[in-house]
Image (cartoon, rainbow, N blue to C red; front, top):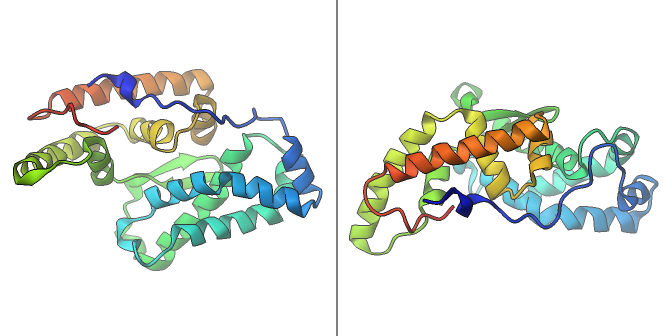
Length: 226
């Protein structure tokens, strides 16, 4: 599998840390129309993130849109805080607030002793549930048709999941950030507390490792869906 297939095209990069976009400044100053526009701009992306990171056991119990709404309400109350200290891109700050709401749902509905702490990855001012290796393996392999295809896919999924479990959690996380959350490199670096150069190197290494894993799987992986 060519690693280049995993490289996303990110069209909307967040402003750099230390910069307060005009829309954010207006929203922080109390412009309600600016608040609505600002948050609506990010809701679809945030909802995809929440749906990806909610524990599968919460499907049908927790609506990702409700989690996003709660996180956006937190952001509305704290816009002045960001405007005074824009140390990360705005989206990363907003995502961290929504991420705390994801954690809250996990604490509320799942037994604390049974939580998979190893899936959590440190992020900007906190931690967020990582994407389970089973879910990541399923996304990488895509869909198969017919009984034979499903049987082969199930075998490859188990082997891929086992291999992903042996990857460094940070390597798995940066693949998720860059591809499935479609972050630009500077956003991923801010989310993980890395320099831009370190995040870029980490991403390249993770892609190379993933290519090795996919090429070692039994059967044809040309239909894999990165």
